[in-house]
Length: 442
Ligand code: HEM
Image 1 (cartoon, rainbow, N blue to C red):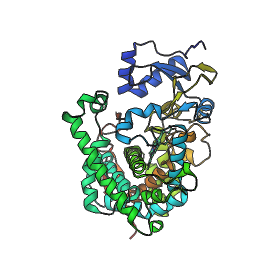
Image 2: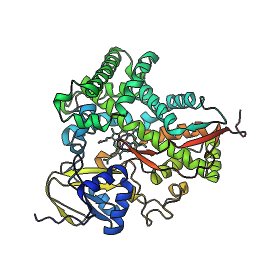
Image 3: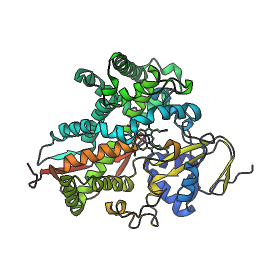
Image 4: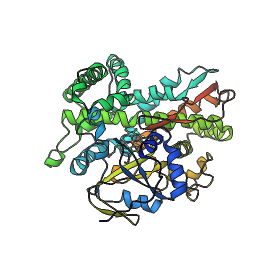
């Protein structure tokens, strides 16, 4: 196959990579303006040499509907194997991925989500209770604490407060793993030195706590009566079909750490952006408070979805071609990495009129077309926690909005974006001033 990649910026590779690292949205916008809806970025390791970026809904549909044997998502995440483990849903492809997905899915369907709701409500209340009226709340930090608690209690099902307290600082260390540590994993001689040795010790301590939790839970009678993700995963798999044998302890550990890493800061970022937008848009906030009081969760969900559109949490999704393939009319060779740009898809004016305005109503009037709103990716790799994060986000918003009014701190108007690992977060933590809502019903 003779390959001509779609055109792209002619900036030197190393410069493109530096901009991609720090100001991804700016580079993507620049490339789209110059080269149109499909273009190629030329990047240095650990990124793809030729990253072909797609933004048109029909191309995105083609990619998400593609055969998972042709389009590997797990391969591109291999750098995370040191943390997530070899069995992680994020790392695996094809049969192993399909099996894990089948076994995990029941824990994330609507009926299971309804079972988690009461505990999520309780956790949201405990955290929001600590907010002091009249003060500035750094919502990203507060939401990170809250979503970490949700992972430990609702996902891991960890009832023992001491064990949770032992886990929190260690999990934070893993979530905030520095790029230098990740870079060092390529050099085995570093494993027993300095920060790499300390990181491994942290991982071992987490594993010990998780394996203890798994062992105790396996020994407990009446798993069916428990409402947490781990208990559901322990019960998953009929064992009749060898391909669907129940998850082993190691597989469970890998999936738990994956759910922690994929589900914690992403949801916290989406929630803190939502608080920021509500503080910046008092009329929408008034409507949101009405919805919270009336239990109109459709409106609260629309707010969350619009915040996720306007402030994309994950920039895009990646797939590596395992064979030569034609996508969007472009002939691409095996080994090419293609991306769907969530950031650019969310700013297309024909899909989202007034694309830079916060307008939650668009998610209620049926105007959002398929393959245009993609915060959770798509196809067989679509985020398994999408429903979970919307349920959690709605519960948290309802708790906040039935109790407080939110305003931007004096002199603040907007909020910049910063990339933390792979998550886009509010650069200054999305601070909001909270006051008690005088209309609260008792
Ligand atoms: C606002 C919150 C979240 C956002 C924006 C988000 C976004 C994403 C995206 C973009 C992907 C990649 C999809 C693709 O490649 O097509 C993904 C995958 C994944 N997410 Fe989420 N996520 C969120 C919350 C969660 C939560 C709460 C959990 C779990 C409790 C979770 C677990 C996962 C897992 C396990 C995968 C890998 C799925 C697979 O490869 O089969 N995520 N997420």
